[in-house]
Image (cartoon, rainbow, N blue to C red; front, side, top):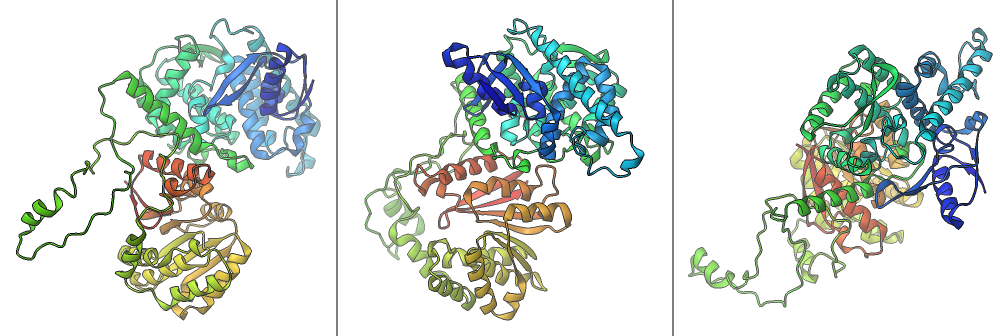
Length: 616
């Protein structure tokens, strides 16, 4: 079999060849850095499973691996950086000459020229020795392959765990998928942290050597830090799993003695690990490293790949919760009740005017609430892979929301116009936030005195209008930026905004664009922040909108200090069809927010649910 592709293809196709007839030979033609110097020549084939890296696999090396760096010319620059991490690991613990060559050529040329295959981005090219640059790029690849193969094939069947090429792969497999990171950036964070442990915990290298290693990683625009590393529960679970995988030993490869030499850390407690993670964060954010230690384009979505964070985090957290329960059967697990079956409608009882309030409770309310369950939780609910079964397509009995609307202030003429035009344009009216939620959003903006609001998912503009009307209480009148990607819907929204009263019309800025692209550009190129960020667009991307609002991925947060995120439809994790992927996406988003220690939130049962989220 001829296998042509990058690291993922190398892993999966090699695994398939191992399974087919138990041993089908194959030749690997590597088209990426990872497959060219790591996954391609590797005898270890694998695939992910159940939210974990490399859960299944086999030892099945290719007959030969062909690595041609000219194929890398068309690669995304983010994939170039990601691949370089696998070269850095061999340099730090196996090949000092390679490390010094990376220091010489890496920061200026490897990414920019895509390993010498594209010189178009280099300035003052006439003053450079292009032949030397090309030769150095070739030497980097050759030295990396030689170091990797020497380490890998010297212990082909992993009969012992002294594996230098596992440097950077001790804790990162546990948080790579939950973070949605590219593999190379995850490995880079773990290499930086490993160098710090070698200095501080083991006393194997000096501060100067640690700085030198971290500087190279940082200069190559790889990540020294990702915010997922602050999640100690995932970090500790990674330690536990790696000890299980490595036969009862942590055996974490770390630089020892000199750069290019390796030692193995076996003993470190969870408390020590937590302390060093916090110290390491301060170390990389001390101002000595560019971008405060964050990498450039560190995430899967940055290079056009699918996001994994929400699903993987749910799997990891569900497993952590299960294992905690198994270890301590007496631990009290939250008994939060998500729903109960409908009871037969009871005849309402009007309290007699001659009864005191306490007498009325005793006479009329005790029996009515005989099945009442504690509505205050004392522990955080454990994560679940899916939302519970819910046999209804609405949250309320037929008359409940109708009664609530009837007792709510009638919406403004602007909102009424939005409703009429939506119907006239034959757009899907249930997507409107409606009277009840419009008033909620208006009053929320009014009482919070929000001056700058981001509305993600315009539809026909009802929420934007409600926010604009509420924002006038901030004094000079607020500004609402509203984002809509669909052309027909955006045209209808513009028509509606143009029909609004002048001050509302002037307060709203409609952007017909992709929301994620707009938010990224805002974070990178402006200093603008928002007092309210309303998430009401495609449900599959809620986690990405949240990450951009909070300033994850190394970008500036869009949420202002003291600001608030409102996420709409969050209880549709119950009411959507159980085979609808958006139901699962919302459930995973809800759990992600619940577990984010930076915020506190309340999920309100307004229409299909609104989550109110603020920083702690």
